[in-house]
Image (cartoon, rainbow, N blue to C red; front, side, top):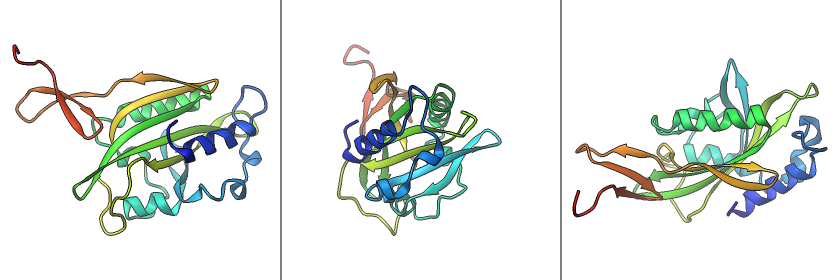
Length: 196
């Protein structure tokens, strides 16, 4: 967790836990995290699809639209959607937090984001909602008039007992000419070398 808002939301969520289980939804109070609210979102599962139930003004501003009801996968590059959905599924199934780092482009700027996902349990213990925070790691960038492009996945880390373990390395994808590369931050790293 590199971003301050990520650490703050994780600390608040952890303080509301009772034992190893995710905190109950009623134990979270938005006024306790008012400073974070522009970048906070809540996802809910509707017919197996994780969609925005709520999204702070900063999240909506970055995408130039009201995010309520938008499936979370729609803000991701199509190649990364299965990986992101799988990570969110792990959060809901196992009750651990998850951190995803990504890149998104707005105009000519590549912006790195850190997104935290934390499970929220219902009274019956079932996890049907996830609270999160999405913070741009590189600033400034132009916002408002132009939505950011789809997020490209850089890494996924699962939080287990407060420690982070990487579960997905940067993706490899074919370049336009068929050469394989992987995305690292805003760069394309091509496999091979002089002898390839």
